[in-house]
Length: 415
Image (cartoon, rainbow, N blue to C red):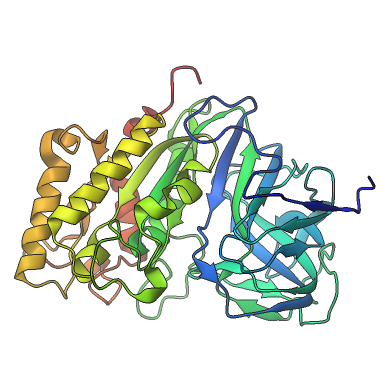
């Protein structure tokens, strides 16, 4: 069959994928960037191209991408895809590289499905921005990650295929969500594992674009997870490198049992999305688990939160993945009972330094962020202004607190 023919994915699966998390890899593929999809966008693509800017935590000699139609009601056809190193705005530095799916440029993904691409020969370095350009010839409603924390780019409807453009001139529209692409793998034998921060808005990076009044410092890629990736690159040995793939979704809960979960977040609890957003990534050796603040806000007491913790931790550890857990951080809307429940959850997490034997270590973000004089409040120096999220300085403080030797201990001996 000619390369221009359409690959139709029969079911939710992984064309071109290698090992799943926690299993030995036949090739050194590791997920180096991720943004978990959470819904369909309020946008219909129509004969137009999108250019999504992804930020890889580690580079490699080749890469491949994950395209999802998880929330789609209809099949999704992508008619052309390229990757290239991102320049200024929507422009490409160097050349664009065509992306195929089992040898074909065009791919159709059924409702609820996903696909991983073939290897694309684009060489990247740590913390490179990679532009993923996709063209939809017909119409499609894309899946999205809402909190992209940067500008991404679209051509006008009817503009046809601009995926090979080096110039960004055709990409005249911007969005702050990320459409279609949800993960990027890199092939790099020096990388020995992927760490997945998994949780709600504290993981998603809310506040990371706030560097204070009058500050003009760019806010892209300043989440604590990005800062952590930079620390890993500079501080771990060259043969013990780790990738970081963010699996945060703002507003979500650990437990599905909280009575006041907003409709938009129902079905996005930790256990419901564990397979899709963590275990389906590649080379995962460790998870940093931050969940619970929205559980308390949405009416959960400590018991259902801890029940969900135990179930998630059990599944991760059964997959051979180390689990590092942070206690719930302060929030101004908590009442006395919320703070009692927060204390109960925090006590469980800190017990023996391993969640009473159910996790592998503690990352105490509560200790980093709390005001030393008012421990149920965030330190003003780190407050984004809402009393919940960390600003840019707080994001860096969180990243600086994490023990890199602890994360490196997640690397299996066989690697």
